[in-house]
Image 1: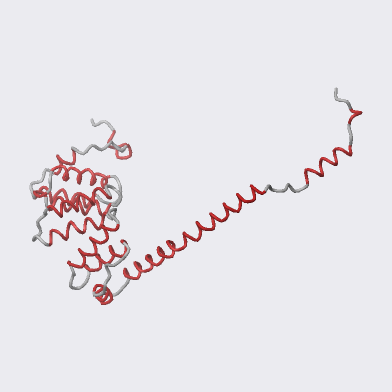
Image 2: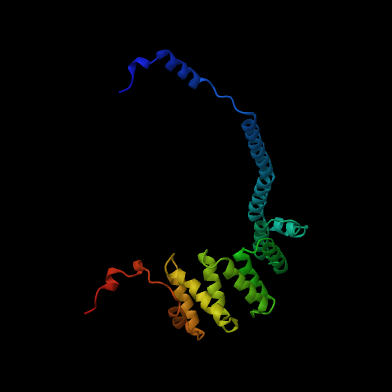
Length: 241
């Protein structure tokens, strides 16, 4: 049993007062806090210029996207290739093709500058594949095939419209496309069977392939795609009489 006679209320109050007193920081801990604060301030200041540049680039890209055709022509006449951001260059390439009189040379130059700055721009690589065929009367050359492959590398399954475009491109140029690239296009296009309203497009591609003597069904059945349980409906799974 504890000795109650040794209990001293004054000692307890003194201890409580000590606990309430603010503890003084040592010089070392104060200096460490100042260093951390200064480092955070420097990081914040250093982050301002990139953020400002990003905002300016986004604004310039949006402005070009909504610019009139005459403004696009004026832009093409300036020294636009120096230090332009990839997104802006991608839009300029697209706008060059959509002019009343398409400017293929500027579209290609802007596209090449864009992928030089950012090789992950799959849409731009696809556009370069098409632009290469325009220089050869519609034939797929090595440069077009390389651009198509880089588009597949950069964005295998990230965009339905791009997958569909590449699939159509491969079918339209079947004899010039190596078999591994053909199979890769079918593998990517298989995703279109499971997402989005792509049934009509795939049916159209199948008819187009059959008319050209392309073994569409054989290539599609060779795609190694796991069975999706939601594709097996109750009607389809019911035993037939």
